[in-house]
Length: 191
Image (spheres, helix red, strand yellow):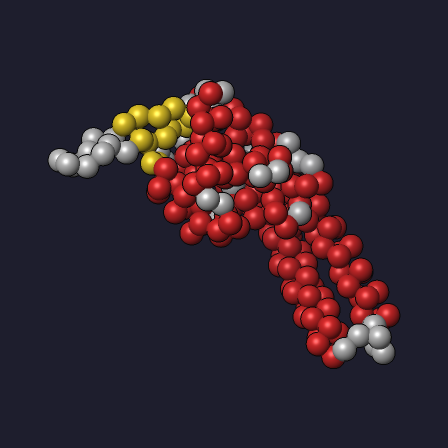
């Protein structure tokens, strides 16, 4: 797994464990259900990530009492160092934060971030999508006679999807700016 995907997985795990301790199976299930991006992740990538986070002291593990005849499961909990790591990762906004692979995870964890950080990420995502939309429109303008109908339709569909997400981001940015004016001091959630 690439460094970026490993980092995104770590961020997602920290965010889920911030809410509540979880055992590995439940953690994987919630990665899939709450952060659908992680459908491609397997136990083969989750458990090495957990092992590394344990080694660095970001999480701890505790056996859960098992029913008679069953193996006990390991429950993972966020440590104080893990809380610090989560907030440090959320604050470390790079261009990759706004790409398709990372944005959804950061967005899902916006409740742990300050308003100015949320705005920076939303603006970055919108800028990235505006650039993508410009590229799509350029391709559409160049392909009237060179691509088949289905290729043009695919580009048109992609452009409409990007336009829809830009409108959604515009609305989120406006609401976030309004929220910052109405209640400027927004403490981070504690867990």
